[in-house]
Amino acid sequence: MRLANKTIIVTGSTTGIGKAIAGHCLAEGAQVLIHGLEPDLAVQTQTELDPEKLNTAILIQDLSEASAAEKITQCTLDAFGKIDALVNNAAIVGTGNIHDTDEEKFDRYMSINARAPFFLIKALVPHLEKSKGNIVNIGSINAYCGEPELLPYSMAKGAMQTMTRNLGDTLHRENGIRVNQVNPGWILTENEKQRKQDQGMNEDWAADLPAMFAPSKRIFDPAEIAAAVVYFLSDEAGPVSGSVLDVEQYPLIGRNPPKC
Image 1 (cartoon, one colour):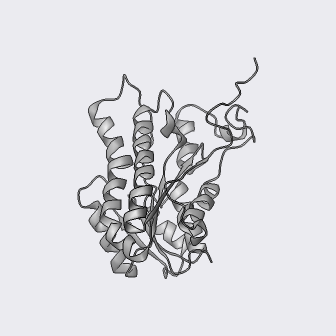
Image 2: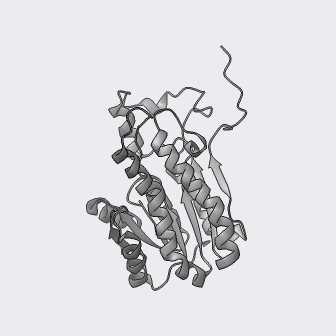
Image 3: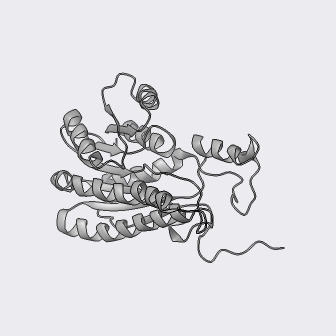
């Protein structure tokens, strides 16, 4: 087991990518703090992933609250006594462009997707230094520029990517803490399925995707992202730090345009 005896915090782990990451961590021998906003989903996730509740704890916490980092830290220590790794997965996703994004929307994206991960890392530095632990941030391929209708989300993910590169050097040298990032492409999560239907697409939209966006005729399963995260969390990654892995099925730069 690649994560045996490691205690890992996975934010936003009651659904989607976070839930898949939590499941993979447990399967590899870790103890996991399940975090989210909905108590019913948290209990459902815990029951599904850890029926006897021996290797998980639950915390319901809004990351935008000032006390969030302290509560997450203390809850994990109370449950498991130590902290070996953090997966900053929790995020808000939604549309917004230069015209319709007001200050409130902009601040909300930055608060959850960039500010909260920063201050959670800051709170955990003493504990991760003690365990020689590591951090994996879940970003997005939109960090590089983003789609027109995903501007505030993309900007926040861009900030996270800069933080990963910066701390991947600083914390590694000064505190022995590795920091890496996984940038997922298009993922078939429960929320994404519903989001596309809300936007007017058919219920089976994922079965008929343009080759431009899905050369393999499908998009990623959350489990495929989780597998990449487990590598960074494990000792197999050795001294790897400051790395950003784009989990996508086509090159982001230099891609050949489709023939007309």
